[in-house]
Length: 248
Image 1 (tube, rainbow, N blue to C red):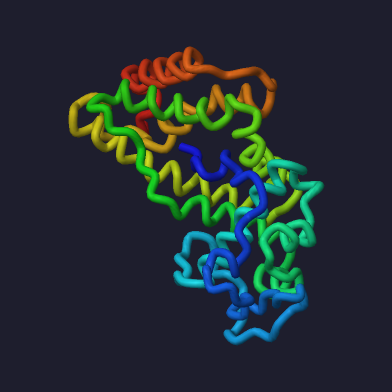
Image 2 (cartoon, one colour; image 1 turned 180 degrees about the vertical axis):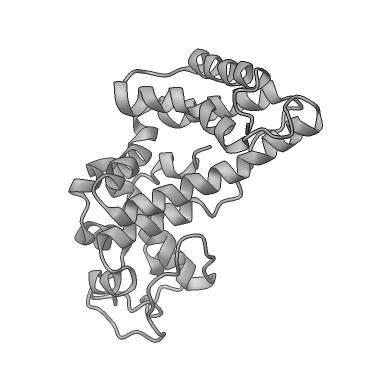
């Protein structure tokens, strides 16, 4: 249920807008930097990125945003939220810090937009043909995202940021709410197959699959593996069959 791009962190220096564009010219659409490192005048109207959940235009603007996102993820993975700065994002994205402040408003806006981009992917929940198989695969995806320390560094930093920034907290909530909404398809198929009651609370079931694993990751700081993923899925399945998640 987590975005594979977020854990990856896009390690290393993000591509600059000029590099991404492949033109060899300075980024000017977003008021970027010239060849000499000085800010050039903007040739397009600057605006704060739309609210989370909305789509952005493509082209150079999208490449600029992607370069900034990559820098944010790398910074979170390497230094965590407390160590991330606008200057770091500017140095690693090739976008002048003045532009970053003008378009994103500061560090909170940069982190929130990086999370928003993570929710704009094409990820879909598994479809194994059974509720048991789907729940197991969902749980194993959580393990895949958090069991490796290097892969888990960026999403862990996002969670930490949510405790320090209200805007980051809102973005994290929106990200997982959207993920859980996609996962309701798993429950809908289970209802069609007769594996779950029609009045089941799909969101409660989906949350129950990942909750024991995330408890270990963020609260007790214990390792997780595929055996624990299978155990979590089995417990959620047993509770489903017992009607524990039915709206009554």
